[in-house]
Length: 348
Image 1 (spheres, helix red, strand yellow):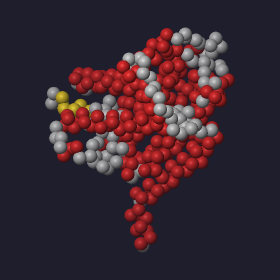
Image 2: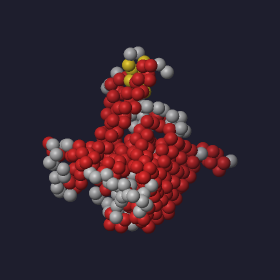
Image 3: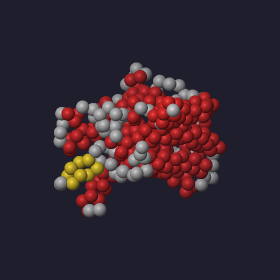
Image 4: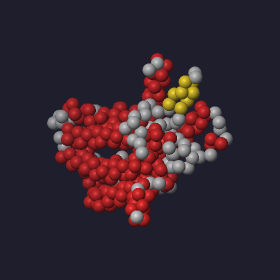
């Protein structure tokens, strides 16, 4: 590894981290604006022009609020749990291919931090660790309401990870790779995976709502039933870490869905008009972020449109509907891939 390559990768890591945080920060602002539009009101409009400084005001408020740690809590785990949720949310962005490659000083530099040959396994491993941040926070609070909220959140996330994992197996069968970069590269033109895996895409999107604790699957945070859920005892910026991790997960989930099923950075027909490799790479980044922003808007649109499920409805949907559908999708995918062999058996 040359020094220039190392510096480039370091800059890319910092840039991806910074962009993730900024988008998550302004997603809180966008959410309130979208909610205001859907409910025929203005939303934030006091902090700065058109309320554009509202996320900064929220951050200052969280930092200035009184820091409280329950005397009967496990102090070390109580402090570490929000950081674990935020860390796992930020770690998933390193395998997302944000574009093709830039040609700088006669060398090609990929717009992906690292293209692991088991990138999908890495994604699921990191997502699974995120459950611990919620469970540890609820348990370390030594509060029965927090513990109940953590148990509900953990069981919800684990249940929907099963259906999500099976839907991804079908995608791996059709693409023949575990590399996120190769999955994106295969979807050139209109060869998007949504066309060959529509049911798998639908299952993955529904499970993404449950994994990010977004409505109508926001049972872990339903104030009417559990005071405040797993973060009842949290205040100040530790509470902010949990809320911030949710918006980071929403951004990363939109990026993963766009990459897996909607072509990623690929742009149909653009290659006919733009021939410069660097310009195509930068346009690919713009095209991917346009898909991501639409995905974030879709998350917000659903939140302010569909009412929350009851917990029994949520678990029934996960275990009795999504998992059987994901298994059916897996069988259909296998049957389609083996159609020639199956037909030859019947012909003989």
